[in-house]
Image (tube, rainbow, N blue to C red; front, top):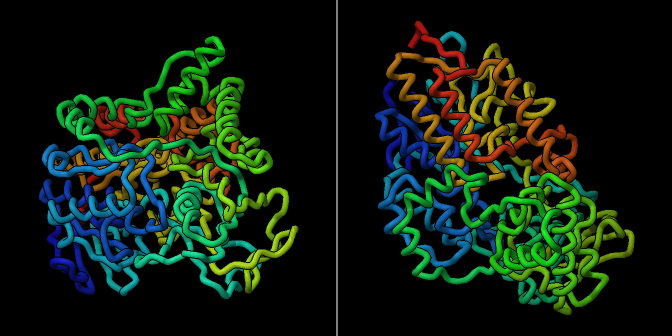
Length: 550
């Protein structure tokens, strides 16, 4: 394998450098990938656009940013020592603590010396003759590597506003995706926020008590459930450490990698109304994603799902005092869970504050952003601050922003013109030796991302070890295996209610983006078994070869 040349601790690499493997992104995926490559004796280097590690939790600094998976479950499992010396403070960790955790991991494993920060990858092309990837940075550096791992994240390419007049507002404009590191004092301000997805809801809940007036411009109401967040009970930590191996194995083999979901067998339609209500109530009281797993058919049968929708609607009506506002906050056009459910810390309660005003954009659409605020069909709203909480170009956006070219110069963006196609969400036919971490076609955003990241990184690492032992230099997904996997992903999704919502899972939040359901719904445990079987069967669906040029 080639020798590494270039960067020392925290330094930028030389104008040219060669590594066994280049990793794009220093979030949880990129950090673990680097750690694994080092352990195998391979030269590896990470390129990160930000100034620090953490990925999602480096960039998302908006008020109230918080994980929606319980802290001890949303953490690395590969190191018992790491788990033992880290103490989570809350049931659902907030962004500052998650970023502190990421930095702790980087320090503990001395990762920064092989990471180039403030460096964006602009292009990556495969050389058919040499069998190497040629990677270009925004500083004009050229790097060559046998393997390239895209650890760019599923929710890292922020959308830009496509609203008439965007950019004309003369007050302070903010985005939840690029919130200032130093924070912003919104006390007493007239604030407008567009968007009520997860980042919007978390921001609204946090800033509502402090701002002067808060105008929430809601495009589509969201299902949101209480987190019931609280300081983490020491007994929970003790139990976790005492039973970590059992819990971790249960996570790895479960449907979504989250033990707290506690899926229940049976149909919502086959139990008595009293039993069904008791089950829903118990899960609402527990908090988090477990409500959606109350019965087996909630995600596949619209009649069963409607029962849960009615339950949540009544909860909202019971919390929000103004009946008209409550009805506007209740989703009525799509099933529960077909869009990402939000886990909140008192969201619906904020609408009982006199300074919070809900504007339903279905009733009164935005006509334009003005220099002084927002004009809807109903009238003008004068603002001091405008916040965009409009989400991400999910799953594919970060890759689309890199000029990636495979065999014969084929662009990835052109291959994905009708929607992303992959084999197992791990590789793309025609792009040898390029791996994706939690790419389209894998469980990714429909699972505990930390569990799915570890599974992908470990599969890729084992694969590279196997290739090295067999002196194989090239691995590539076959078009036939890719087509079969894409068909399977679509078939499984068609058996659920996910397709009955215009969600970012389908790319529906990005104008012009093909409507293709991107994550794999078949379950994280099932998916893991499939990946393991593929490797055990001599990497079925992949073409392995030896290059004469090394």
